[in-house]
Length: 316
Image (tube, rainbow, N blue to C red; front, side, top):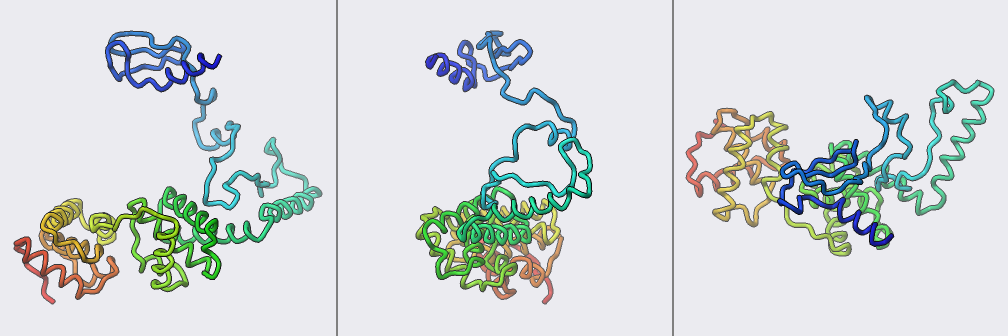
């Protein structure tokens, strides 16, 4: 029996035909066969469909026919594994609950909400993850980055790094670290703008977390900021491509090392806007990038002189 299970597991992991080496495999779920499209070899004659046996044509049908709950998530203190009592005041058949029973249902909801957070540690985690969700929403951060930030915060709690620090500061440091890890960087100024914690404190917390949690974070590159800054400035795809080309030349000539990535990215975008005729002022680029106009001017001079770019600068 064990050998049969191992054999089945090996068949399910097949990605190419053992006869001709083709990767064009067809899964015929009606006959339960796994067939090679090139030579016609039947690789498996008892192939099992692991998907659901029902179909859904909209989200309501999918929700009503599914017999499993939502996937586990680290952004909720209980990982989303607890049960919630719906506020729709309807039973399992979709009928409205009588008014005389609604008071009892209201008390059930209240007590169910209370017992979800049973001790101080869970209360702290629940509050922190709610704060994380608020910051991430304001910064338009994707779900995978939020999950990473939640995992980092949970590790910080296990290492007892919360003691003596504000919850908001540690959450902000977790978000900043997660953004760096997933190559969706946000500047410290951007994160500080959605918190009551100063930028200096967020940076200090991030450095401590990075050291104690052994986060393998590589320095952010100017290329990581180009798409977001160009989108905010409403520049075309041609301008984005020009900015990336300028940054590649600058990297090849070792002009980016030792300089702030946001400043170099802002200067490259400014030069690209002039080259493509989509002029943006230094002030507007500086506001989007979170740097000063002086920084953009300094990086602009270095890039144009060292790379030999003939750019007609805007009138100041």
